[in-house]
Length: 294
Image (cartoon, rainbow, N blue to C red; front, side, top):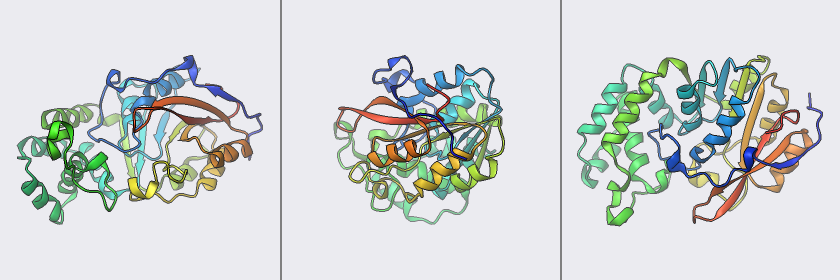
């Protein structure tokens, strides 16, 4: 059923300026393209201002997982479920949330990062999930932009000419892996299709969804370049969101097609600024049910 509400275009709560991501607690081991660290303060306020604490918070397209991890860490919801389709990314979450977390942390610490060693690791077929997790972290931290999609390549120059070592901080990465493990009982990870999981849980009223899908706008963060699983039926996503008994927040690129879909479903649009790739101010859309104003 379509939610009956007038479309309203507003600024995000408290008129947020561009968030300094250095001020946000860094929990994820990923350097993820399209990551939402900059959105953490907005999501935090959105959850904390609710009359009732949600029974479950679901990050539908988990990726680097910074939103779900923050919610699990700060506990504005009773439990967090993270859903991710990409098997490489999923291997990392399976491992960190299992008894293999310490193995992964130590593997990161013990690895001698050279181009030769890195190539040797990535050219092998992983023997199990935890080895695949290490390959994924290694690739994410040594490839340009943290991009895991086919066609991505090693950093050439990086920061101060450090090349592939520019983003390889083994002590920091190991510490994050170990820290996530300390509150892993608050997280359920599901390797699968986010839309299917939304359909399966749509009739449960105590759920809050955070929905950060691959973007739509041509020429802006082209999905095929950033993500292995970039194809998505966006109209279906809006239809499912319209049917859920719980609440949700979507984040999208500021595209006319997205605004049209939101308007067609009676959703509320808010805008929030972020720092773009070239350090310029750009606005993204936050979309919520019409009866909930941010």
